Image (cartoon, rainbow, N blue to C red):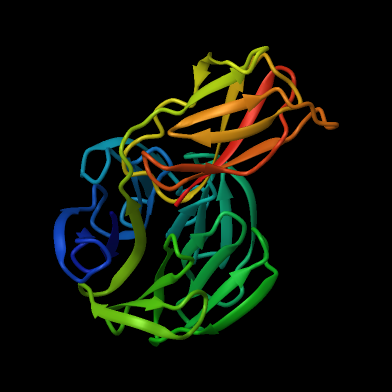
Length: 311
């Protein structure tokens, strides 16, 4: 079950909801100096938050106040208002310099940045392809073309001070509003609101925790005669509480090249059906620990790359 999480500037606390409802089931104080801003559920099942009080980014153990690691972003900006990730790197909105920044993994190294579409960028969300952002002053919600300053669509936010932003597995965005102290569930990327409820005072960040149990996917290849045998390497534990998003896994030396792929009961099978291409990817959609489905693809000698999406 997915749980909504929001942070509040006033009180500097982070709140976990019961599913996508107004009911709060857990909370803790920011690990920083008391001015929590953006939050994001990191790829490996840990919560990230930015804290304006000490200009630091924190990685916590799961949904808890236990800090695993942190870094200072003081050399970049005085505040990162909103954060999200693209499956590899941290993306952060810099309201001081009016920029949206891509950091190298969980670090202070800047890989890329561009000017935000308005004056004070706030919440960020990533759907696997495109970035979404809110702006506190223009009170609009923007869809970017990939990670770029190019805006493909936008609309007025339902409140006067748009802050937090996240996107669920159905492709619906959820936005927060500082002044109204409300969280809004949109229909897709649109101004149509399907539901809303009151959060704590001065809502800042939004993210979603998607609970998925630990599981392992086993790779098999087809021998002569049609029998399948296991390959030593496997996908391994994806991890509990994994945020929806695109992931990539690699298997070494699958013993079969130019092959199609099937998935059944958590087993990825490399079939001995030659394809004209030497390289390619296998798309695997992970919907739960027990149910997998896959499209066709091609593999190459050596590594087989399997791209999958946790929804």
